[in-house]
Length: 383
Image 1 (tube, one colour):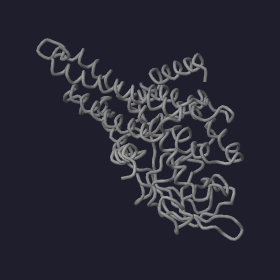
Image 2: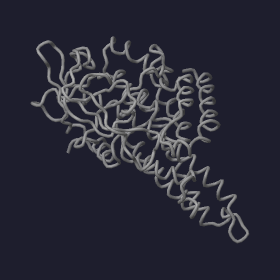
Image 3: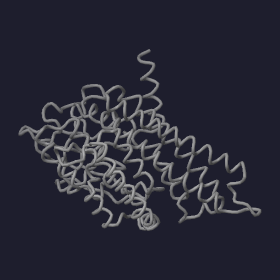
Image 4: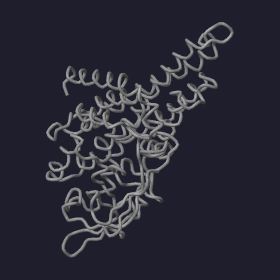
């Protein structure tokens, strides 16, 4: 997108987040739900398709622009971004990376408009950060259709998804990180069911649930990539997750900015001994550390996005950005609670909520420990 047009989009999203969403954060957290009015605005603004190519009705933002948009989205409850994050990210990118022209034409416009919400059904009870251990199976029938059996866990947007990108093992006789394919499974497919919403530590308003597949039959056209997609699901998943890691890193940077702002505002207004607590050097030290780490995360994410767009680094850079930024925002959130003292431990105070919300970033899209492995193997090579 042209920079002038993107600047207009960025300004509109910034105003929407700060003027419309921030005042509703406590309500979203309490009710565990995003108001329908905010969903409608997000659809109208094109947020369900900011990373989907323009030819399919999206904004077609390259990752270097996408992260700047996500910095703004990260300033408020992560539940907002979660509504449309999978459409743009790991679910939508399954089709962008591996779909047939027909699959892209059928589904991507619906994802971009928000007509359809997609879920990325990869994680299982014994297959999370390492998807090679998944046990969901897909059996080809004589008529060319497929029958899926298995269960998925912690699937974002599952309670409201219209279609699931289901990863299943199609060939048990090859190495574990091969023999995996991806299937488009509509919500109304007989045999597919969704469990109750998970009750999480934080990120209320962002819904996750288990998904069960009991002899779910889908046509041959449901195989993502067609015949070329057989046994390529693991490769597709890794490509989607690499993009998603930079996206999540940008979310962490946006949240860190909000936490810094909350800390600075409180330190200026809260008084002890007749002085604002911001006048005390130990408080200044906490804030200085958070400002520095936020700026480091911001620079790292921008650099990782630029290298990703250029095709220079699509593995180590995303892992490093996600690893640093997710750990960083946890430290910034901890300092923000400390600056607030007792009030920072009270429900209803933004830093308490963000402290809970931030913890998940070190887990999904691959844990911090998985990012360490990717980074180390990327620079060491085979030993």
